[in-house]
Image (cartoon, rainbow, N blue to C red; front, side):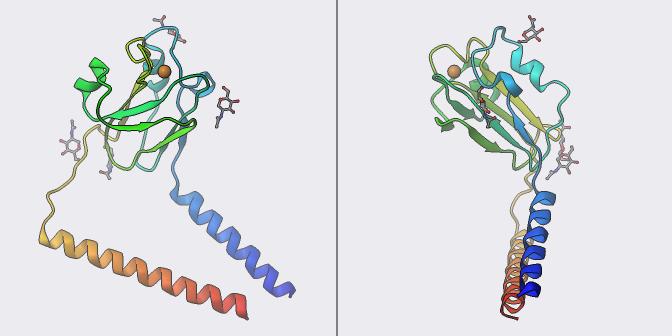
Length: 166
Ligand SMILES: *[C@@H]1O[C@H](CO)[C@@H](O)[C@H](O)[C@H]1NC(C)=O
Ligand SMILES: *[C@@H]1O[C@H](CO)[C@@H](O)[C@H](O)[C@H]1NC(C)=O
Ligand SMILES: *[C@@H]1O[C@H](CO)[C@@H](O)[C@H](O)[C@H]1NC(C)=O
Ligand SMILES: *[C@@H]1O[C@H](CO)[C@@H](O)[C@H](O)[C@H]1NC(C)=O
Ligand SMILES: [Cu+2]
């Protein structure tokens, strides 16, 4: 029994380490100030300054009162506070994953909040995504990547079962 518990603890630690190694930084947008109408329009620009966002990082918007987060896709929409297109999250805290290089735009759609400066631009990498056109060879590469991942997962599960049953 003692041996079994040792192994279970070891596995839990190993999984935790693996997850820690693959997850990026989680940014609390505005830090303790949170996500709200700022005192001046450069508030969130100032918050972004000096930060280096990377693929795998995530943003957490945290608020009380009435706010939300809309991710818009173009600078034009962002600059003009266009509230009609994009991914809207209404529940605090709202998390957005930065899954690839590019420029991400977030605004609050309540009343004039965006116009008053409740908006933030996040640049990941050099700010542009490099998505090569999908070709046949890319599809093959993607397929074999998926297959090898499945193989690894199945092998791990078999291994896990054998350890637990031992
Ligand atoms: C805007 O407000 C932030 C804090 O909310 C402050 O650090 C910054 O200096 C202010 N900028 C201007 C231009 O007033
Ligand atoms: C969100 O903000 C509230 C108050 O501003 C704070 O108490 C809480 O810890 C924050 N939540 C997170 C997940 O940071
Ligand atoms: C993202 O950009 C950084 C810096 O420009 C670069 O080092 C990295 O390889 C890029 N990652 C992807 C997935 O394109
Ligand atoms: C950003 O990086 C990508 C891929 O490395 C490159 O194609 C693009 O020209 C770069 N853009 C800028 C503005 O440097
Ligand atoms: Cu708002």
